[in-house]
Image 1 (cartoon, rainbow, N blue to C red):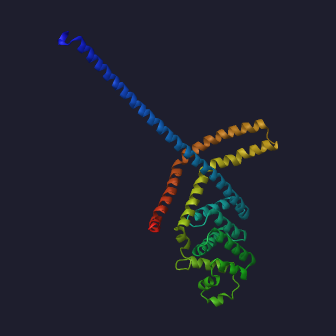
Image 2 (image 1 turned 90 degrees about the vertical axis):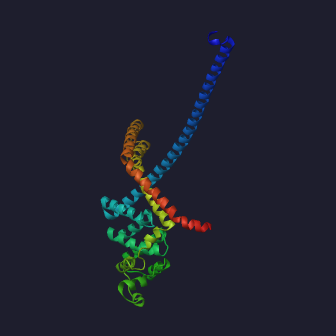
Length: 328
């Protein structure tokens, strides 16, 4: 043989070369199998993640629709009270701002403002009076329930023209010394204050005086907002406002198209065929507008979400020293 190699040696060498190639193929096959298994695992993880995100978003949208329905009820009631839809919308927006920086929620603040407006108090004055009352309530550790109850008392005082002995007692039960506040704001003794026929204007002026810098209740709501319950309340208000904005397209579709059409089909005022066609057309328009709305508002949605997360993280970090101390 050429080069001095025997046939046996050549056969052995070829066999070795072939087995080496086979090992290489087997190795590559094992590698690809490993990659495939990893890809499947990642796919499963991503699928689970998307499913959980979808569930969370579905819950957000559901809460947003309910929140918007509640806000619509408030706007309708305030429109009746003020005679203006624009004024009602302005009041609601102010209440949302107040709820976002106080320990009181939108529902409690709206009910309190409604009570005073229904008694003839102007919207802006009612807002200032409720904020002053809120400081007094916060200073005594009260919440939405106490705010609503004391707002009822203010409404009664406004309607009657002066406070009754029972009204004064109700404030006392909530930890608010009406005569002491009047004495401070009017520069008289407490004994002299007890002889007054206390009017709405005198009482609210006393509450405002106590809320000013140097007053008895100055900064009370701000201080309460820094507590755990206060921060949870603020986070809740911010989240619900975010959910309401996210669900607004769906809310409009349900309110303006879907439910009227379905009710029309049930009552017989709209034919079944026309109703279904209308629903399909409207649903397609809704989906398109919903997607466009998400794209247009994505930066704002992300910013709102980041703000909520920042608030939550800040709250947790601020609590860490207390948590560590409790563990020790």
